[in-house]
Amino acid sequence: MKPNTQRSEQLFREAKRHIAGGVNSPSRSFDAVNRPYPIVMARGQGAYLWDVDGNHYIDYLCAYGALLLGHAHPRIVQAVQEAMARGSVYGCLTELEIELARRLKEHIPFVDMFRFNVSGTEAVMTAIRVARGYTGRNKIVKFAGAYHGHSDPVLVEAGSGSSTLGIDDSLGIPPGVKQDLITIPFNNFETLAEAAATHGEEIAAFLVEPVVGNFGIVPPKPGFLEKISELAEKVGALVIWDEVITAFRFRRGSVEPFFGCTPDLVTLGKLIGGGLPIGAYGGRAEVMQVIAPLGGVYQDGTLAGNPLSMTAGLAFLDSLDDEIYERTARFAMILADGIEEAGRRHGIAVRVGRYGGALSPYFTDQEVTDFEGCEASSSEQFARFFGHMIDQGICLAPSKYEAWFVSAAHTEDDIAYTLEAIDKAFARMARGE
Ligand SMILES: Cc1ncc(COP(=O)(O)O)c(C=O)c1O
Image (cartoon, rainbow, N blue to C red; front, top):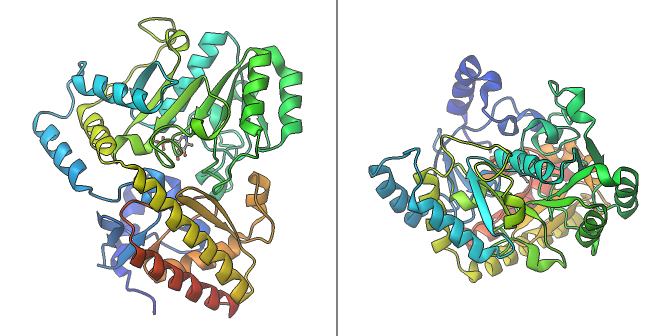
């Protein structure tokens, strides 16, 4: 039986009168899953969300990966309430910024210096500027379908929300910006080598998500990240790892220890703000010294390093333990296996991408290793699956390009309920519903 979502429907009608498209981020639209209105949420606690009609959801969206500890974690709530009472922004240096940068460096030892801003978009946009300022070069090599926020240089052949809506190339980006971007397929060694050979000394940086989280979850092929680093070193370019999703999602810190190479710059966001707005980029002192007031690369921000985001970030770090990573990975594995088993049981072609506590089902019989593979998976099957899941109280991102995130708040019972819901969803799909 479909839940009553009448109030969501009414509110969305109202939203469309005041907010362009009714949503402040197009990824929140339900257009791609053929639903006329999104569910309007009212409250989150732990692993759960409640909508404005009072329906309850197990949440695997986790704010597009911004949450690892679940909603309204008591430690973060208390710390932020106390900080709020001391004032939310001063426009002056605070001890909190120093402390968060110091603590992040403990977990990401290849970084000497950080800079905070308020979104992952800003972090990547500025890291690109730093790489260009440092190398004196313009070209950026990036990977098709990768999403790195919505600044001009990374919205060409971008993924995630822009792919969901079929806008891989945003309008409004001048040709001059495009001419400095080289977009090649992820996990393809030949085109990578070709890009380095052809553009060599014009390349400022190779920009990559070390584990892709924006056309589902796609780990790098063995040696791929190492090859990027090797070629970058050869041509004198920097390597930027966009870890807005991956840092602190799979371990306490960067994913760097899982691979045999180290980036020059890393961008962070989402998780490190404990659910409040944040972005950060960091790298070796020698590179970071190009940033004003030390050097000539400019980056500013009224709310950059604001006390509330810093406080939430510190409370987030204080609440981590290694067991969280072991458990979220175990639960994600159970879900991934459950999805593939249910697919076999009901004759639905489905493959699951997974890394640690993150996963993504693709409705295809082929393993997905790049954006093309994700593109080729069935959007229509995904839309049906999504509808059957949300009707059973499972909140997922409304797009085949987005990942599911297991949080520290999910329980064995949540996983068991989700597996039952998957089975029922596939049974309905097998009946053509
Ligand atoms: C890998 C990656 N980089 C950058 C961003 C942009 O972050 P924000 O939405 O905070 O601007 C995102 C957002 O989804 C992301 O997934």
